[in-house]
Amino acid sequence: MARLLGAPAPAPVREARRVRFVAGMPGLEEYRDWTLIPIEDCPLYWLQCEAEPALALPLADAPAVLPDYAFELSAADAHALELRAAEEALVLVVLTVPADGGAITANLLAPLVVNARTWVAKQVILDGTRYSLRHPLDGPPDRTARRAA
Image (cartoon, rainbow, N blue to C red; front, side):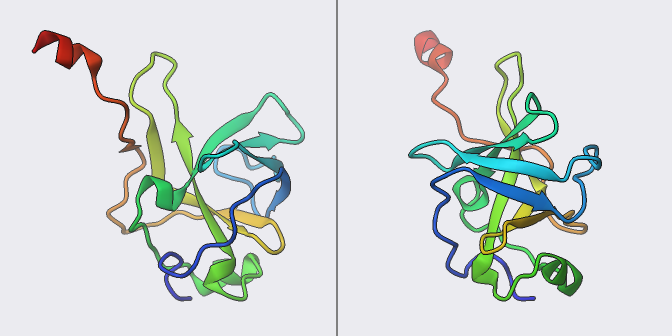
């Protein structure tokens, strides 16, 4: 299949959507039904587990994290996701928000690909790429550095 990004992205998700994973995410294999909940006016979401509502993952639109993020989706994954065209693919990345207030990172190595027509999803592992499991997000300026100057 053609590169996923670079093609027009689907319209932004504006309301909560039920998402069904064709295979459970690594470490969460038993959970296949989730709800994608957009956070108003920003490219962030919560992915809440339907079976365990206390389990929710913070997500971001991949292009908001890295504008030139692109990868090849295998024909098998495209078929499993029922994708007719790359433009149907909503590509999201899982964020890690440390409890100690450390830097937020994005998992670019294992994006979530969601068919925005059918709401079928899969987490794909991008073997052999330059992408990181812990890509640092640009945060607000470090105020302590300004005070010391």
